[in-house]
Length: 217
Length: 348
Image (cartoon, rainbow over all chains, first blue to last red; front, side, top):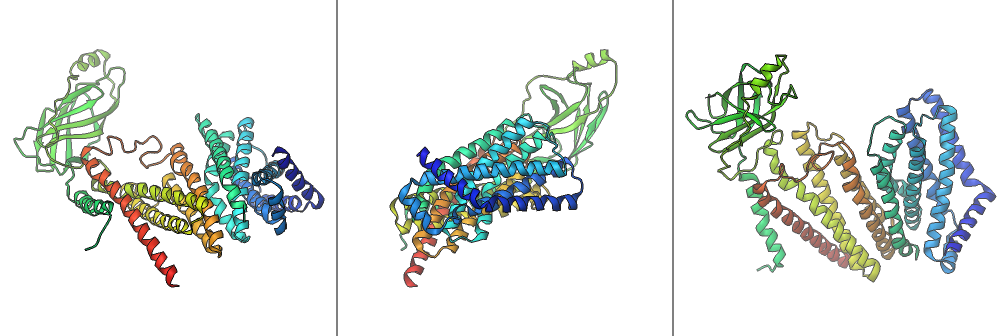
């Protein structure tokens, strides 16, 4: 199964590497957003920095992951279905999305640092938050993107379904981000880390149970 | 003669009981106003109080104490003006606890109708005076146990700010309990559908989600009316209110998925999977995340939920039947809606 996941993952990375369509368009989108922000805001203080970061991350995540199932040609799903276990399809997509999102997140933070500044004080907490949130987001959105692919790829559906479902992650994540910028004092921030971790695990367990049912047509 | 299942009779009996008891049982006595807010040590202080549902009369054996921790001091004199208004005369000897030189005092009264308590009623002003005097005067605060007569009538408790709106406990809170139950039943039906592929289970799951959302909307509305009278505005962007709205949005997605699929099997499968997914992600949203935020709602931000302060024994005998009645009500409506849908599908 690990071999299957790796194989599918490599296939996704290779397709991406060959035409570089997704990553370059998203990177262009990211760059233009931050350029617009630079001219619109000129200078941002720490409170707005955190808000800008989260907005950019949400839009990146939704735009990147929406296409993760609909990008494959329709019949290729049949092909995967006959060859592999459904869960290896799911995890290869989720891991691919996680890697892609981590790259884009890093790029977003670096660009924000280039145009504005990076006011992070507590780097370990910030990085842990980013990693956990990104993995939760990619797990949830990969699943939702399959749902939206199954309903005939309506572009609105992904946004409508994903935003409320992501809410718990975004609430804890943005709170932890504020803690790591030292904008709020919270001695109990560990509970937020735990709750994001719990959401990761819940989503993981759920998708193991639900994905094979949904995958089958 | 209509034949009904036994549990529907329970609803028919309980619901009028809840409505009648909820609206007709009077509230206990309480203190709504007190002035001034500050009392001075080593002086005679006159406190004017306004009672709610009180029956003060001249010559009644009414006693009053100001209390801080274990220390208390009794009123020298009580002047009753009418049933709701009285003046209490206190001579404060000094500070009860010599280590602290200010703090809030609670007012405790003993009336024939039962006890009257106003927590943190007045502030004891910090006044500089010789330490020796403080030591002497601290002797006069008593630490004996207060002898207060028990509540004699059958009342709901009076709570400041809440007042009569405490009755909403029987109509707002059970709606949410029932909503969670309805969503849970619909998840069970969805799981059953995913295992056995019986299309009826999917139709049942849809009905239960629909009625659950209806209960959620009613819970939000009753909550925001309650908030208007206790917190000051219909929507104060409290974390509990926001989470309620978000959870309704999540279930809105369920119906969007159903509407965007035509094939009944695909509709049942995709929406069933989403239903399970949404319900499990609802649990952190409702039960875990709000506890980490400041909130005015009971159960969050250090406020007690359904503790002895909110729910005493007189309220329990209405509240628990109300929870059962609302749950049965939700299940009954959902079943009716399922049958209507079935008839509709057979005709068209």
